[in-house]
Length: 56
Image (cartoon, rainbow, N blue to C red; front, side, top):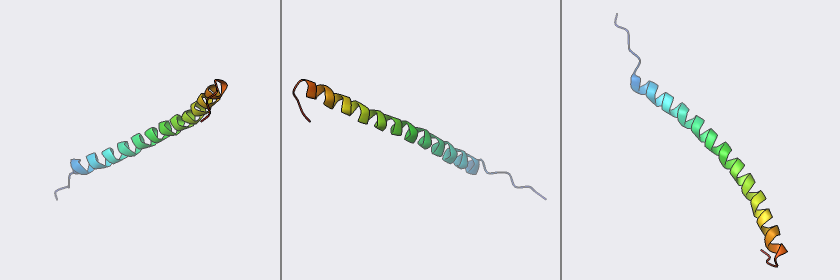
């Protein structure tokens, strides 16, 4: 009885899908951090501009 070999293509697809999900999770976390920092910096910019007479 011949045994079926695992299809390398299926393995590659599953591995690629896993790596994609892992990378997206990493990028999403980084984006969240950057967006939080963006809000902080925006507030600091507004404060500094207000000190010299410019309001946003």
